[in-house]
Length: 125
Image (cartoon, rainbow, N blue to C red; front, top):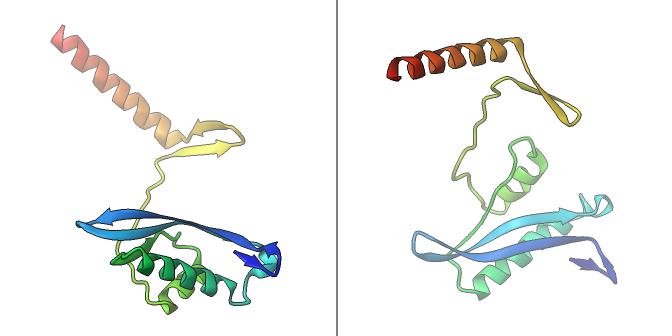
């Protein structure tokens, strides 16, 4: 996306197929900080919709992270609706810099699994 002669962001889209129908997926939308809150995002999304229509797509899809309320409000105002929900459960890895450590509960569970695995291997031998 260009405003005047300066790029203010980018839009990455690609044709895909969903349920046997042509679709366009928005893989990434990025805007410079100074371009946000001025309607540029809305214009970028309208551009994506125009491209999708010209390609004969039935759907225009994207993923958005749940905490990104600002983007979700924009997409909802443009007629997007939720079609899936991602969920996560943290299982005990704690990251410190580039090293990862197991929490005490995870270490205990790992020891139980190792013991079970060892006893299963010993029974089958």
